Structure formats: structure tokens, C-alpha cells
Image (cartoon, rainbow, N blue to C red; front, side, top):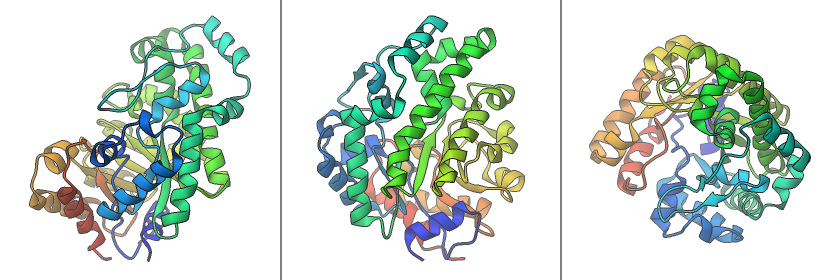
Amino acid sequence: MKPKECVLAAFENKVPARVPAIIYGGGVWTMKHTGNTFDGLIGKPKEMAEMVVKVNEEIKSDMVYVGSGYNNVQLQAFGGTIKYRPVGAPDLEEPLIQSDEALARFKETYPDIPGELAKDPVIQTIWEAAQLVQEKIGSDFLVSATAWGPFSLAAQMYGVELMMQDMFKKAALVNSVIEIAADIVYYFYEPMIKNGSIQATAVADATASGDLISPRMFKKFAVPWLKSFHDRVAELNCGRFLHICGDTTKSLEMMPDTGAQCIALDMKVDLAEAKAKIGDKMCIGGNTPPVFVLNNGTKEDCVKSAKECIDKAGANGGYVLLPGCDIPPSVTVENIDAYLSTGRNTSY
């Protein structure tokens, strides 16, 4: 089986020929490794695509991501001011919607979400780069692009701390902002799916972490819009990959309700427990510590952790080996290769 076929088989909770092995995201790592910057690649889709292809020639992740790290930049199309830093992903400087009045102004100003995204130079760059990456390596590797999940993008639009408070005080307003965010995420992906540039979405709903919100709030605010988004993606016959940071143990049983095919779990979640609870319903991914092992450990440590993860969750397929979160910019190629090759060399 080709690398992408292994991943897609696992997403369908089937048994591929071998364990799929991927990194998640890797945008900041890739920029540092190649000497590029996030703002320096805007308007240069060919250079962005060449960067993604070149890096994957080194690390051979079964799944690659175009535009990783640009998650906040989607909001530039809707009046957001983006701050680019020498190291790290771009940030949104100020929230966009924090009141009913601001919500009304947003809807009046931006009635055409797909149209606004299509005019943005960063989005255009990512879309064009994804097509080029697909043409170059898409026959072998699973090409995707990263974005925030609806809840996390809404938290950027609203302000994380205030949104956490207003989930109790102004639930209708918060829900309306998440609905807009879900549309922004979907229409970021839709053109790439329809023209065949990507074969899977890869959203990170970091703010929906069990470290930040309760299972009750996860069910009320995060799950419905993840399900809405993923259902629309499924209608386009596209793969659906979800990562949520932190300890989501208490919310594991709700993960199949998100509509994702695969849930990538943080290192705080026990893979064996996750496999036992939901492994018959969806693919499990994870979850080596990206700092303690991949960054600070030896190659031997990386191999050991990969084998432990596979032992916990790899039986009977429906599993993808990957770090518990995005990798730090200082991880060595040698450690990444040792880790991913362990999966690639583990057959069923």
C-alpha cells in the first residue's frame, strides 16, 4: 500500500498493510528547518509547495500539510490584524466579535464568507500551493491543510478568556460566533477538496481541550459545530482528521459524535483507555510527547515511545502513529525519522 492508502485505511478503521506514521502540523518546525518565514512566503505558492515537498523528502510523513501554522490568518479576510513574529505562528492582534452589536456588524460587512476568503492573498497562496503539492507527491502521500476547529477559531475571534465566561452568560452570542467560525473553516477547505488539491481535512480544536472546558461545555459548544463541519466535508467524500490538545479523557465517548474519522490524542490521554472506549467506532491517533521525547530524547527514546504507542492502540488497525501535538521547532530530523520509520516498519 502507498503511504496515503495506509492512512486512509486507518481513518476508515480498517487494517492497513502497516502502521501509518505522520507528524501533525509542523508549520513552525518547517519554517525554521528551511529558513523561511510565514510572511515571507505570502504570494509565493511555488516556493511554499517546494518547501513542503522538500521537507517530506527528508522525514517521509505519510500525511503532509500545506499552510500549517497559518490558522489565525484566515481571519485577515474579515478585518483581523495579523502579527508576524520572527519565531512562531502568526497571531491575531485583536478580537473581532465580543458583543451582539459587533456580531451584527460582522454579518452586515461580510455576508459572503467564501468570497472574502477567495480575495485574501494568504488563502490564495495556500490554495495554489496545495494544488502544486498534490501534483508533485499526491499520488503517494496524503495531502492536507491545517486549520483551527470551529470552537478554537471562534475563541480567537471572541477572545479566549471572555468566551469562556460568556459561554455561561451569553450562550446564544457565543454559539453564533462559533457558527460563523465553522463556515470560515469549511469554506477555507471546500475549494481545495473540490479541485482535488487535498484528500483530508486536518483541524485542531485546541481550545476545546479538557484542560479548558468541561465535558458538558464540550458537548454543548464544540461537538455540534465539529459535527456540522465534518458532515459537510464527508458529503464531498474527503477524509476527516481531528486533533484536540490536553486531557480529553472525560470526553472520549463524545469523539465519534464529532464526525471525524480519526481523533489525534494528546500525550495526557492514555491510548489504551481510548482504544478500549472508542476504538471500535473511530481511528485513534497519537501520542508520543513532542517535547519530552521527540525534542529532548534520543533516537532510541523515540523508537521506544513509538513502539509503546503501537502496542497500546495499534492492534487490529484503526490507528495512526503521531506525536501528541505539534512538534517544537528544535526537534532534529534524526529523531523524527527514527520515530516515523518505526511505524513504517511495523507491519500488520
